[in-house]
Amino acid sequence: MITICLKPFFERGKEWIGLHLTQQMEEDPIKRLKGVKWSYRGRCWYMPCTREALIDFKTQLDEGVELDISLLKQYLQQRKTMVVGEQKTIASVTAVQLIQYPLCAENLLAYEAMRNLLVVKGYSTNTIRNYLYEFRLLLRLLKERSVNNLTKDQVQSYLLWLLEEQKCSETKVHTTVNAIKFYFEQVIGRSSEFYDLPRPGKPFKLPAILAEEEVLELIRSVANIKHRTMIMAGYSAGLRVSEITGLKLINIDSKRMQIHIQGAKGKKDRMVPLSKVLLANLREYYKLYKPQNYLFEVRPGIPLSTRTVHEIMQQAKQKIKLKKKGSVHMLRHSYATHLMEAGTDIRIIQHLLGHNSIRTTMLYTHVSKKAFDKIESPLDKLNW
Image 1 (cartoon, rainbow, N blue to C red):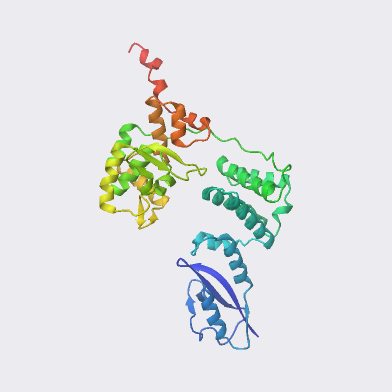
Image 2: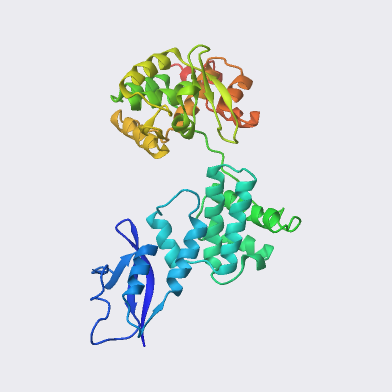
């Protein structure tokens, strides 16, 4: 009996099925089959990872050939759970992880149960992605051991390992704690045992703020009107990068001079003032690009990715040789700080930014130069 083992692998941006003989043969029974190719990198025959290709392959096999599909079946089960919704393609990193670090059956069910509850409870896409990513890192380390059997001490040891051995940031460990607490407390109902997981103290870091002159220089450096308008929108209304890409034509109310931000962080809507300068630029931009649904589209009806906006911002910073660290969110920080320095009430700034707590908005009191303008350094008072 000849046995061919089917192993999934990822190459050139696609999923493939590797065909491996489990014993040495004088004559290779695979090379004469239609639809298979030789991979010099993988040193094996392979075919597309599709149902049609597999069916066609099976119909060509002789009676004395047996298929071992255990590894392929395991991969497809993992893929079905990890890749959901309308997504048809899979990232190379995800595919390699599924092949190299498959979850055991019980932990795969745990992952699926957590994902389903996050969706039912209406958590944001970003929160779902971050929680599942951190939870899966833990499940990978457990291998064949069930996550449901972990004790509180073992979970704390894992958090300590992340901090001391992996040198993870406090912010990442906070997300890990939130993900673990969600699973144990809300998915499987361990309400009392895991409520007091220790959290590392977060460092107090101030955001980088652009001077008004730097904002102007940054905007003027962008020649493409579409890209320039995105930067202007981010600064003029204090938008998050996801809010920039999510803007639709109907969100721009030129009669009332407002921008309607829909489904922002926390699934909250808010209204912000529409800048006259931005409106003039938007009208010029619209005449050239004619967007259909979203304000900034990569093609009709499809919004630009947040990654593209980040790249545009970085290119603009490099062009004016701006050394301050920060991405598109720097525009939002600068917007809030400049409003505060202009005397805008902090409660209004809180509403414009969409903050739940005034404490979050209070951060900008630490970077505003308004309080320092009247302070003279002792060095300047010396009789030079």
